[in-house]
Image (cartoon, rainbow, N blue to C red; front, side):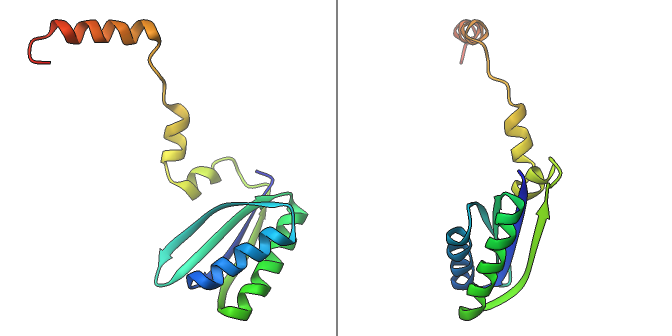
Length: 118
């Protein structure tokens, strides 16, 4: 992640307008949309620092024409742990999941067949 951009609005229509304008204004990607409650909607984008700054500015300006912009923020070079902050602890857990090897999977299947009632 090179930069994160946030545009927080009151209402989905303004957030949709912000996201659309931001994505059209610069070479950025939509990360997610968060709805913390009370009608607030935050749009999060990522990309090169300059592109994110331009996209956030364009998105906020556009959103203000159809609704209320609460706040905007650009974080250049966010810490690696920001991903788990944004997506919750499941982002870290998904990375650390280990899969059974075929030999272990076969062994556990054989064990289950030998146990009565399974």
